[in-house]
Length: 492
Image 1 (tube, one colour):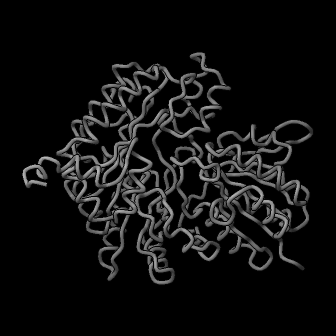
Image 2 (cartoon, one colour):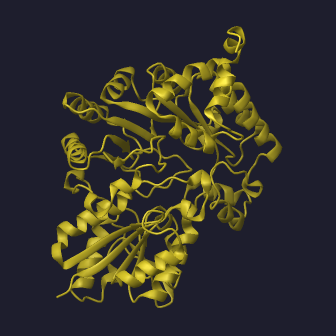
Image 3 (cartoon, rainbow, N blue to C red):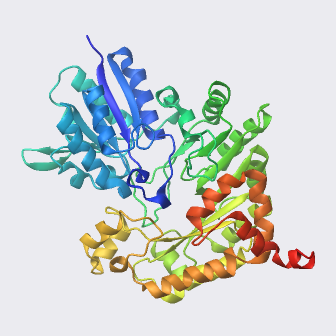
């Protein structure tokens, strides 16, 4: 009996040449999905993992791969920002194969009815996929025609879209196998920009899943449940990647690495006690009002070189409305302590919450003055994702669903007037203030540029600033801004 052929595909905004989204990372979710199924079904299945911009660079190349591989099942995964790609991929998959087509990931999980209404998509896996996909495969391989009835799906039945009962989460993450690293070529990511500044060969690590907080702009795909892998399991993964795949840069994909401090401390101490030298990156951020100086010290000792924190809004009223409820003074202390440790620190700022006033938005920009040595403050526009509380609030306030959907395919920094409570002139003024009063401030540049060069080569910094700073020319331009007064004194 021939193995059942499965092709899992991850899409990327880079496929549409959206330069500000030009990040490519190993598809960790699909690697977990593949490893789980290989452990369960062994030689009964043949799994291939494909990724946009790595395995194919256009839809025509994607078609060629589908024709060549002739899969029995195609699994499509994407973010909301690439929602158009998953529908195109399903159409082309249907045209060029007889495969069952199943969609999963953030966009299908947040808008399952919309995705399931696509006649080219046979089913949507909602939320965590390992167990649901296993049961689907089990039924298909055994020839059972009831696979559409398994828990955790959204499907079209008799002309109606139906959700099956929700799937329980994997409570014990120690049951997860190591991701399928053999299913991807990690060398393919060397030299490509990712979530961090580093473009060296790297691997994503997930030591936790979920988040217990209830921020209104986030999905509750994981049902607000937070789970941790045993530190020993994470350490085993790091060591395998270090020795077998020659990985030195580890990018943590956790939403909340520092929630269970004892687990985080245990893992960091294990790293410190191993005779290895690695670098750690936390692009999704650490929760700033619960982190401690002691944990920051451990992170630095273990190899942390880059981290982001999330302020979002400095308005106490908006913090309450969006249910983030961050202690801003504690965040400020954490950011300032981290920047004192020669770590490259980013800070997420958001603007455009429904009902937000200009005064509240400007307060967010002004608060950056209390964190003078932040390396990269990111000013993003609020995204109103279907299925989130903030989306429902926006609809109740009269926002157009069509305008909201259109805005979701644009990068986070782009102004979208139909879904913004603030006008474009004001937003652009705030951007200019952030650049002039913080980013290009001489004293700040003199502090951050040497730290950035300590960790990253000029080529990586050039790439970073090229997608971050409007009008950026080269690193010499920043040097002139930082050290011009000294050059004049020296007669240069």
